[in-house]
Length: 249
Image 1 (tube, helix red, strand yellow):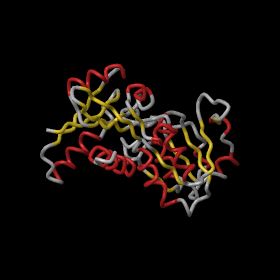
Image 2 (cartoon, helix red, strand yellow):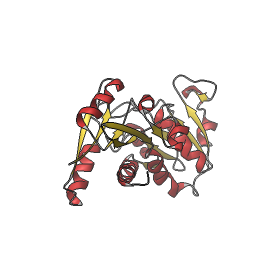
Image 3 (cartoon, rainbow, N blue to C red):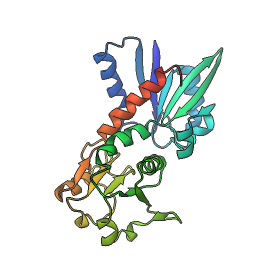
């Protein structure tokens, strides 16, 4: 039996186990299982690998960056971003070798690409964590101008207080990469002036539980096009499966 799973903490928000269980059932894949491994420290990863012996793992918050130090190799795009959410595990005798990839790139690109030619090529990226880095990487590939917005602004980040009327009106896509609005904290949302949004804006939330977050709901009330995290979820999950099963990777 081949084993796959998800590491992160907490994992109550995750749809991955349900997604892969349904995939295995629908596609009559009978030799695979997918489990959740909620670990309160990334230092527990070697124990999970050695005891559970998985063939591959997904990685979610808060370990997408800290997991890198445990890897034996890393894909160039994941290395550039500094975040990994897929681990392919190979065996050499009694030794396990871990290789890191980032399937968020595929999920983000598949979500945003249909809008690349119909909105202004400018974006605001809310949050500065591992998912934000993947979003910025994709925006750069799509030749979008973008600014990162953080509660703790640095030299390369805006603060939420910097989001004036002219900044928001000059933006085509606003992307939430923070966990604000994620189950069970349904009511939280990034601190924007939502009354500045119009039907010319596209809002994309990487949170997928709930499907329509408070952030997206505020945009929908004002006529914005809203993109849920589900398209990204499905796309990155399928990319994970491809990575685990491609002998060339």
